[in-house]
Length: 431
Ligand code: SAJ
Image 1 (cartoon, rainbow, N blue to C red):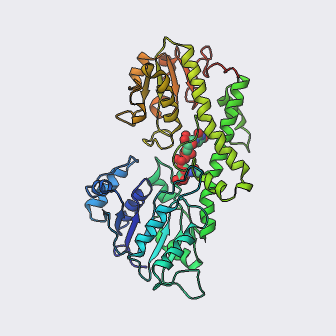
Image 2: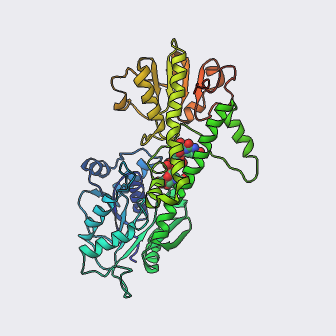
């Protein structure tokens, strides 16, 4: 492969994964073009700014743009390596939609040449990388694609899932191990050479199908384990036991490691990816499907209990703490906290304060409800009921003497010292 300073890379999709990936590759001295369908995103990046919030991303992007290593465009250009990082949403019946991936491949086909490497990073159903290969073969019959015949191919095609945690993306892009699945072993080796430029973690090669399933497996594993914690929290409510204490105690066993219950599972990965496995093999995935259902049902359960608590205390104002899908980020995608807070706003809007340090304005879903955005200090001063929906650090730091007299529903277990005289959980609901 060409040297760092001559390497040209196109990253298709400048979202939560594509932009940090493009910036990290640009930092190695490669010339990176970020491709996006949004003119706004392209303008923002070309002016050295970012359209998403991620720790340290703004400084990195402004630096690599200023030094000419990263540019953005709506038009593709020839390159040595193409990285596809576009969304793979699903439809109402949970059928995965790989339309954006195929559209990216169609665009790449217009400039593809012998020697190039095409890598898919988007979370995808098993077999998607082969579909990309088939599409490229159809669009570019002049190029020999891998895995179709015994002869060596002109281009390499591989699947390498991203595994980074929002809030730690720039660290994990470098430090996490990578699974690199080639259509052929040769494809995997070509992709491996590319990742070694910027990944410090181990890079392990396999087939594209195994790599695709590995990614889905990781997120399904986490979903199933969170579902266990969420189910436990409901049982503990029924038994009138503190679930956080039970989990702390159970986790002292050397082979038990229970995750944390919460108001449900959000984000664009764990709440979505397990469905790709269920959809592909419904007969053999009762556990994965049930975990999804348990985690989704937790949102309604929290809404019911919070509504009962608010209805039982008509004189008190209510603070909903947090809207993001998890702690210390500004991402509201598939957020259970957002769903709970908007459900409460529909019913009790004029009594509701929403505290979310990661936004300047309430999302449109709150329009006309009467709910207001407030800071944590105002919420403590004015609200008698506090519903903790996100474990942002700023909420964790509120000491007990500022909240000891409040009625609290702590869905994240951030205030273990909340006095039991005022129930940490609302009273058990009838029925
Ligand atoms: N959650 C709980 N209890 C827990 C842990 C998480 O309720 O004990 C909730 C969170 O509050 C959040 C949701 O689950 O609503 C997901 O959060 P997360 O931190 O577990 O994961 P994500 O969605 O931010 O990122 C995941 C990661 N996957 C795994 O940990 C297996 C990340 O490494 C992946 O790169 C990412 O999905 C992705 O893009 O697929």
